[in-house]
Length: 483
Ligand SMILES: *Cc1c(COP(=O)(O)O)cnc(C)c1O
Figure 1 (cartoon, rainbow, N blue to C red):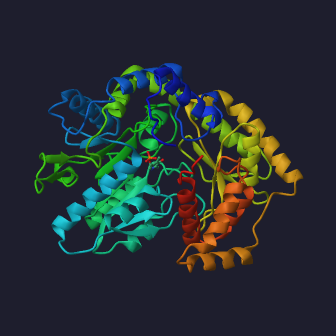
Figure 2 (tube, rainbow, N blue to C red; figure 1 turned 120 degrees about the vertical axis):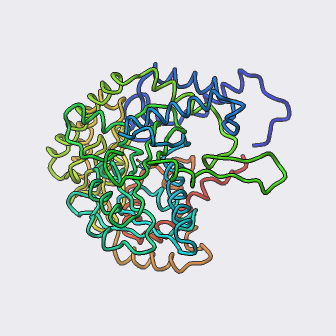
Figure 3 (tube, rainbow, N blue to C red; figure 1 turned 60 degrees about the vertical axis):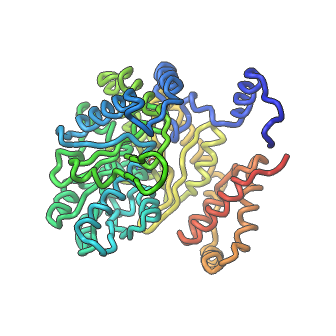
């Protein structure tokens, strides 16, 4: 597409925006168990009004826009109280969990450099921790040491973390909860280890930080995970997940200003304006911040508690419902409203495809180490009324896959050969055919449709080869094709 010669009318532009969504997932129907945390019409509306009202204001300069300074301080204050932090806890509003995590890792790195100049820092990250920690390590030049999880509970193995601590360790990480299986790591033990070894400890509460305190108030068993635990030095918590805010909303919190100061970037070494940034973005829309502020004001504590009640009920129903389906097995004992299940007989990838033909989106996850391939569901409020329908569709999907012989599997020898070939391929030539086959397996729009065969193959090849394929696939998807 070219920039149109003459601008279109407002009507035509708005029509274009609507037409573009024709193939988007109809998430308001409550059958998407991922990506959108939908609190319903009214919450969506208030978030969007606030977003639009502050879309042009710029967080680059809080002295010009004290409104945004107020929203951010209010949000951080609400977040630190929610997570058991005293008035010494400080933090910032960020664009999402990934940015919160990258900033926490940057802060830990610079605090470590200040204490140990010239030493290359490491962080110890359970294999269940979010990929954002790998991204942070990759972006920031920090070494990441993966630690094990218990193969039955999927929680971090603290003995393994202890064994991996060295003089170069700057940070240890625990999740409350982990994304993949929705379980809370033993934060008390992880933080105690950090304290004993005089290293920092980040708790990733991107998913669970907001909701778990409500689950606890409802009587669910939730282990301690927040600033009340001695040794916890930073936390991340997303507002665009269970805070039900429009996307672009998270907070990163630190035990005190002495630590947070390592996050703030100032630059006087250029000819432009004086640059001071808390976060990665410089020019920064006020929209997401105003929207998060508005949504928290609108829903209120009692409102979130009622949402939590629905989510807890739905989680318990889904765990019980999946356990009652022969051939399926729930992984671990999730505290959160995130549930993963697997099968020792049937292809979970084929089951996910069958669910899609029945209108439900669930998320396949590939195997890694002791963790088998599985299906993940993140339950959001819009799903609560559709729990029974989802379980019915799951029973049908399992029956369909069983009737079809269990679903595709990939030959292990072929996968091993392919892995070796891709890992050794410096030109990427071996990837072109694969990427083309993934694309043509799709719906004509260049997006993959039935994914069971592709996933079965990806599941068998090495993680390094997987990453190379995915990079090539992404590049190919994001290449504009002239009409
Ligand atoms: C979602 C999530 C993140 C990353 O957050 P984004 O908002 O997607 O960048 C990090 N950790 C956990 C546990 C998450 O669920």
